[in-house]
Length: 442
Image (cartoon, rainbow, N blue to C red):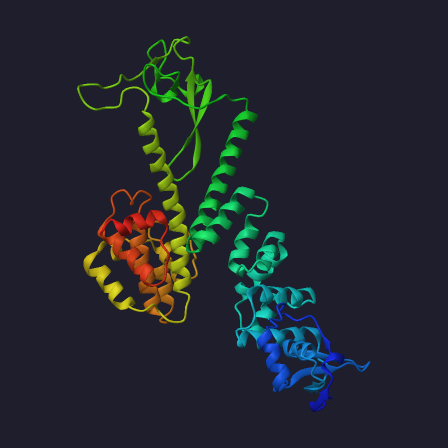
């Protein structure tokens, strides 16, 4: 049976200060001086163990300052000895409420709790944090890179991203550079790195598959006379018939605007093998390309491809951001005008929205098969009358999303600017490629 706490005056030097969830005691000279002059005004909370030692639960900073200030006695409220998990939880909650706990200390506290068997769900319930926040902190803490990042003052979110790319030195250096110079671009750069990693993995897998099958891989191919390698689709056999893939003796790997890779059959040494091009270059006094691209054209082409890839990465970040925005308890400020303006000025967004994208944004459960008439947002709205404004905002945002293509930065439309500017007003950070669209209206 629990006994009532007792207020005792004890020598701070005799108290045991257990491992605190706040590592930085922050014993500033001014704080120590205050304790030395005025003493400890707010009692320290502690518990006495069976062997008689008194362990501090709350007030480690005050206790250490009193020792440093050589205070002979301080007030201590002695209570029953709690379980270790409850002791840590109590400290976490107290420091969170006082806004004194760094994210590194918070992650460390969650880690301590997990080690003694407290689940993420239980930690979240006791501390008032979301389960996702706790899980992210535990993931970051379990990684060498993430733990080191927390120790350097990174947030849990930043540490989690560094943990994700642990072992990839180039990616780590790029993230650290962004954190130092452009921290608001972190999510965009992280998504670009993910997409780049996925494309590289897909390319390596395709190359391995071709090499395992004994296929020759060439770097370039064309459709006309003068090319070293000729696409099978542009070749004709010596008997006048169109060449087929069976005539191919090599492959070229093509990457589309989405960064997806595919192998196209080509014929290398086609002239010696008796093949001829199916088409002649058109040069009827026009500016049609004749011969290989110039260096300037190659640079322009690379810029086009790179910006398209960046736009794809930005789309992932943007949609995730809208989803998080619509997961909040209150709809964003000004949503009424945003939706009515979209419907009256850009009517296509309401009529052409993607139901699956909208459902994701609204946090709706997605069920059923993807048929012609499939629309999970419509199904969601039919099942519930709660939070209709969130479904409406999701519908409009999904409509705008459908109109934005990977190359919209080349010829931005007013609807794209209206949409991105509204997201920025709500707190979204545009990527450099999205900023091209925004700035096009200035």
